[in-house]
Length: 204
Image (cartoon, rainbow, N blue to C red):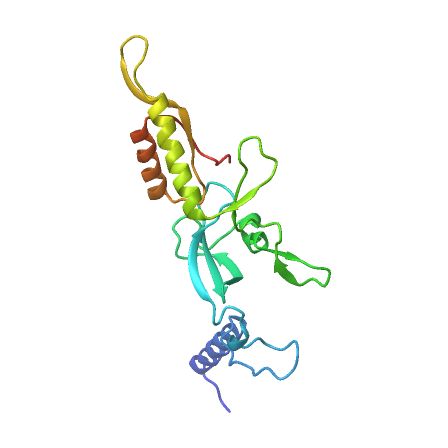
């Protein structure tokens, strides 16, 4: 069989393209017939999970996280590729975020961490015992104490008669789990109360 230069180049190009396609994962899907074989899409643990977007709580960068839950339990976490900050990438701590919810038993199985706080605990002044409270009570009590403190310590003018409109008895600590817009609203709220001690938890 006589092969022209043009035919030789065409055949070589087709062979190289086919080899590259196989290396890039374009080969036809192989059925799973034995343990250790290729994993079917149906076997993924997040197939039936509900996806929720969240912010990584580790530091103050604010990377986006995808949290997969099924029947009220977290089954996986990963970086959010649509988030403008991390674009799906995570540091070593963010990659291990799944382990904040779970711990591992002697068999190596993931079980919910028994030390993880899931309820509001309140210790009254001079008491040594913690009481379990609901969120409605906690939020109402916090709001009442904030208002009471502001009313008692709000200062319109300093000793020189200069208008200051401040309350130095309150302080605000920002959260790494809030995005820019939420932190902006929180700061506006602080300024409206006259709070001058405003800080953030991020220390990078």
